[in-house]
Image 1 (cartoon, rainbow, N blue to C red):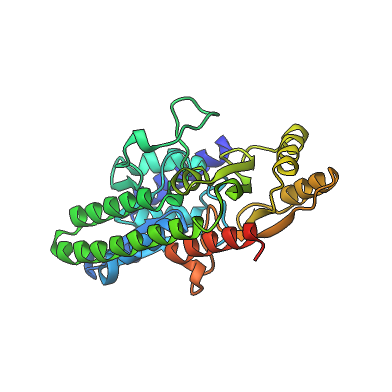
Image 2 (tube, rainbow, N blue to C red):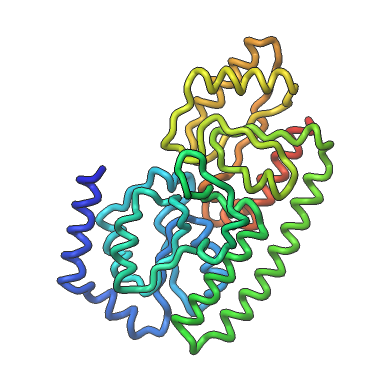
Length: 310
């Protein structure tokens, strides 16, 4: 992996030295701010807040796992040409950390999580002094990310500051309504049924915000592997608590959850796969789940419906 990063950093140096060509020249004169975002969730909120005054390119589409994502040479060209780069931070894009650090020395590179109060962040046990990066599953924390995007756009393009403020204000109101909706849906479940079992530990912010006991088969990063002991421990828990459903994730292979389901069945308890959740990536563009709001609504509806047996 270090060799791959070295090659990409070398490519970045060469692109910088040679100039970014006609596309960069066009970007500087068309009056539209050129932005690159890493994950689909960040791409979405940047498009909403930026409106007609930004051109946003997302690096990671539907089903892409940001924990394991390695930038390609094509990505390097996009990153170099961008005027602003937004990323999640908190080690989510771990394989891109050196590249983003290098780019930040000469252009605006912003972690959308940077303004979240550390007291609201959950620890990452695997890494001392690091935090769980999946903050978007608490809608109120993701509202803070929206504010960071808004403030960065205003600083980068003051001529359209009023538009960015208005777009953000409208979107923040929509997210406040979304947060209320998730709470209302969660309240349909008795507290003892609010147990969410997924492929990896992406939903702890969701659990804290909306009252769920969250259990992930893998760790916070999908780079970790679930062992036989992990499967056994979680299967015992599911059978004891009589959890009705497990959930797969669009960006994580299904085989581990299927193995867990089989282990629970071997204990004499039938547990279903309750549906597919969007965790580290949204759905396909043009679908309801292809927006942050639609993704969150899909997740809570799927979770509550399956755990209620609807």
